[in-house]
Length: 225
Image 1 (cartoon, rainbow, N blue to C red):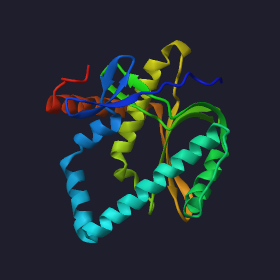
Image 2 (cartoon, one colour):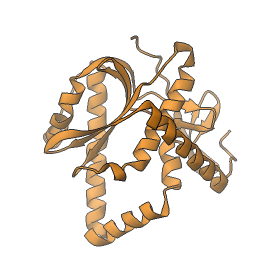
Image 3 (cartoon, one colour):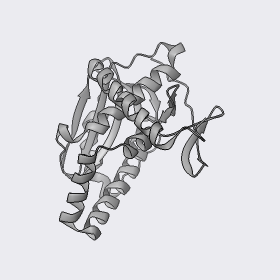
């Protein structure tokens, strides 16, 4: 399989909202939509965790995880693009966690390209790669401890939204994503892998559409077009 065209979007402010501009239109990001419509129970669970560990410690943990995730993404992207990879000491565990999975990649079609959808959103999937002969849409995560599947609801919706947008953007190429893959790097053990079937992605897409509708009702569509 050949590489797909890579598209970039510009982050801009419209009507006091941060959106992405591409081909003359502005769209909210998938993660913005999901964050703004996070279910109340998820918000309460996060608040309980912050209270349990304390405000200062929760901020430190979140900042550490965010920094590690951003820097790991950069190195994985370099690896998939056949560019030099530099792993600092504090990322070695995370890199080693992901290496067995990355070694299984048979072909790379896209790395961190913008995909957008006529329903009114944009996303940036981490990679479209072939593993075991099947086209996987991948999302890389980092975590301080293993995650349970029931904690990953929004990750699954994110994958589904990316798949829908990629299918639309690359329709002329006949793109068919066969599986979603959420890989969570851990500092001291192999990465967790959560595969998402085509049927599950289609089911999650329906839930994402519902959340997108809720997002639009809350904020209105002014400044998005």
